[in-house]
Amino acid sequence: MLKHTISGALLIMASTASFADGSRQTATPLIPEGWEGIYEDYGFSPALQIGDTIYVSGMIVQLSGEGTYEQRYANGLRNLFKTLEKMIAPAGATLDDIIDMTSFHTDLPRQMRTILDVRKELMNKPHPAWTAVGTTSLAVPNGQTEIKFTLKLKK
Image 1 (cartoon, rainbow, N blue to C red):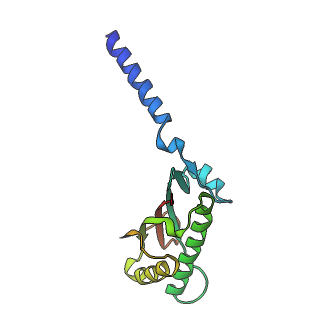
Image 2: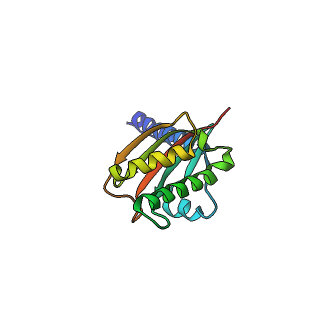
């Protein structure tokens, strides 16, 4: 019985020690000015840098400005990419470092042409890997698309 109790205690200690040494604990959170409350209140990092890789949490596109839906959606996308650039700049990253993106769309057929055009306008070739998924809703009311990114820094 004592042998099992000691084994169990050692297992708990080992799992606690490994948790404290996980990759996330060695990561550098990238928190844009004004986003400190999001980090603390919601308990997630807008982006994490681990070595030469940056993982950006989903960023939400909202309609912006005047005009047609497509024009307002394009403006919202441009705003998102400007915010992304500010977020990753302290790590020395640019949009050229994006290697993968995943987008979640509330109206994929209507949004696809616009996101293709804006992405090509703002990002140089070669194009990143990209997965586009349709969904029914996002965490932010009136959010149109949520995009998460993975970036790899140049060595």
